[in-house]
Image (cartoon, rainbow, N blue to C red):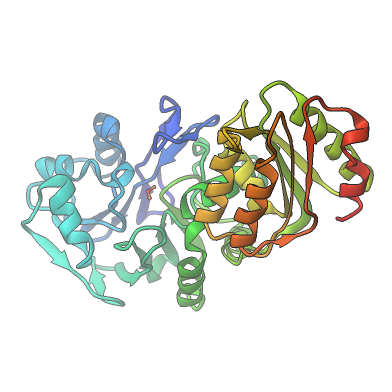
Length: 385
Ligand code: FEO
């Protein structure tokens, strides 16, 4: 697929894998993007996941025929992009790997490759003839070896996982009138929240470093090539990495016998009645990444959990721990939930939220045994928002 005469898309769509990193559901698939930069020399930017070797090589050959790949640029070593490095080396034995000093030991560790590796430094340029590549380090977005590759003659940024998203690429590969940024916004947010979310600081550093480039095309490792939505894509990434959020509520709960659930649904209705957006997630029915997405989207987190083993119900604790792990900042917080003989969950959730620096809007409501309206003042809690 030609993005231009000199830049070709050779990635693959994956509709088979159900869980990315064996954790994150893929209801719309995912792509592993790889690109060729074709000058007098040919550079391949990253590879793809292990199971796509035949399709990947076939994509390369469809673009360059019998020409060899002269360089393999390694921006990132997570195996969804690095698994086919040995295959590329077997197919193109003279291919020189171009990467940085932090990635080289990982190439040895994952692929056993130690020879013909060119180590480049920050800002260094690799000429390919009438086109060139320049490299910038973006450590911890989201691994320590991560770098991006800039092609100045094409105003194209090969950004690694930055600006990437779940959801397979469309037939056009690029964003277009029929495949817009809005079609991907939720999945981009879920991808960011799940995978990059902890590294808001490094993402901000990277955005500032790359801010002076006149970018006309973003070639990320997952999702469409962004040509028509670059301001929107960069703005979303900027907001997410600053933990900036819209006014609204992510209300997530778990419930064993429906009592905490009844309270959750009552509270959601009271919040919506005030005209405040409220995304509701049953953590016993869906993977917590969907709620995590909305924790990044909204400024208020409300969690409902019964007491279980004198603690927090495990699916709710998993989400709260994920929030803490990602060092989400600047959220308001409320907890609620039922108990049978000892009330612990709300107190423990408040402690975790307090530890995360959240503003605790209320001591929360914990109610004994069965839900009834008189035990749970939903309107009172909603009035705090
Ligand atoms: Fe898509 Fe961090 O690998």
